[in-house]
Length: 84
Length: 465
Image (cartoon, rainbow over all chains, first blue to last red; front, side, top):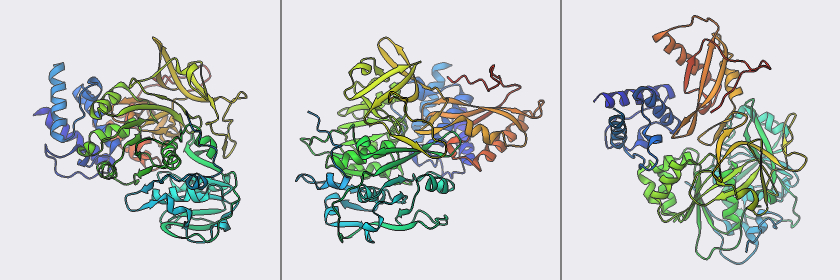
């Protein structure tokens, strides 16, 4: 649960800094409808690397890109499990 | 056998030539058949009045931009393409140095901007009968804008021949429908527009504000077979639930370093597509394509690229061909080519086991999702903040946009704030940057440092990795 809340917190933080509006967050929400643009998303991934210590996008050359928020959360949960 | 296509005196002559069907320009709001431009015109007024003028093309709708390029090539002395994301504060500089005396728009672009005495020409997708068309053609200069060190755009001059030198116009045995994530006012997008026009294919154009999913759905409905974008465009597309709406036969990546992860992702998602990543810059033109779906390029490119001389000098890629731009316009323009005609691309490469890999830029330019950022410009803004003494802007690798901009900041007060106060000041400095910088140029992270290293010449020491 900690990873989940950390990710939600960072999403809200980045959206606020970038002046972007978020809709309600749910697992089946497509990532591209999250409300973050490409730059916002890049910043989110960079912040998550700083706080969670993993960047599953870079460490996993053959993994399919996550499409919805649920995929994204699992993407990070799996990555954190692998290093711990 | 390659059919060179830079033999046409103008784009409209290329459309008029031959009997095979011509494609359509397909935008989010408008669709125009290119063949209709032979008897009808996108210019509501008498286009002949703009003969020999230097026109600035700035329309909100990319279909209108494409139409204007076709109408004015061969008619205007010079065409300058104003990209949608370039701030209007640069308009007077661009107009002065391109000697613009006519502005072409769809009436939506220049709201509130001061336009002086230039003639204003309306261009629309609602075609009108062509009044008269003189057969006389001018060798129109094409001016593309790219980002410069000081924030002022660099003005790069091409001709139709240099822009189309890499395009093979031999007809395809099967129908080709092009699509591009790029805006056609940028070199990468313009290449695809010219490719579509000269190979008589249709082209699906993206609107600046359009969501990637909406574009993919439109591209799928139009039956796109060939599609191009930057690696960042592709990463975003593959995260869209609409990524499966297209079934391309050919996927092209350019404008940024294509890493192995993005090449693998594209290859596994579009298993039937040929994947190509191209090395091209606005100044150097299209240098070469890499088709083995591996990052970097084989060393054989240096000796085996037809019509293009490629060499590595001091680990930097230099290119000479008929596709390079001719010169820069603007204030104190630097030389675009060396005396032997080579364009120094500034892209650093490293040779490992017979293959060259891109290492970033010698001048430290940071490529954020295909948009260039000059560290000096960002440092200039940071250093204007009242609490900042000095700053060093660097690149941080990022799997989504290729890179992000980050900054080391030396504060005037060496003790500096700590904890929450430090965090607040970082955010305040970012807000300060946002007032005068485009979003991709604002440092995504700011670190307060006790000192910044200087080189022996008294300049900031840059170690870009």
